[in-house]
Length: 295
Image (cartoon, rainbow, N blue to C red; front, side, top):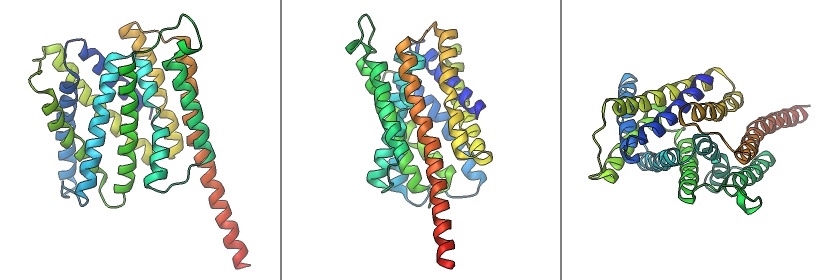
């Protein structure tokens, strides 16, 4: 999981770095999608299953939601300090909880409510400290909005994936992401294509490679480790992003970023471990009721 978090942090660093070469965000998305499409197609064919899946409407919706989220996230990464862009992306548990309640009829647990409160306060501290503190710089509204839309899009994609998981192979679900992202990003790019030089081309390639390494590492972690522990380790990406932002872009997070980021991560971890404890209590209660009915 640490390898996965480090790979994703390197991916966002490459996105930010390649944007300094004048490469448009849509072109970066297209490059990543192209690499992912080739790898995903090979993976589906290796399993000898149909690439088109069963529920095509939901698969297309998952691809569209993920693609729009990716565009927003990459724009935020290119225009915000790396630490802030990464932290704001971790607001997705808030949106996921609300969407899961509306569309999956999942109950919102107390730990999730605490997570939502922590995340909202943390967001306020990071984005607009000037409302309560003097002489503090506010982040650009457009970039913050893009980051929030990216987190929301990720939550939409997650809820759709959860709905699809009962009928579709994971490789097919992954395949639809670049399948939609590539033509969409090329269409939105239009005539703004910039021919990358050797360094920019190498960075674009690394965006796709580090993404794939991160996804493989995440999958392996979920297979070999309990989900709550693996998810908790994923938040180390924020630490890696802070270090890489300092090394490559001379970005030093403000005290308000540290404070707000700590609240967001604390809320997310409470949600992870609180949900685990709640599920244990449910199992114990079910076992008790079963024992009582049999006695």
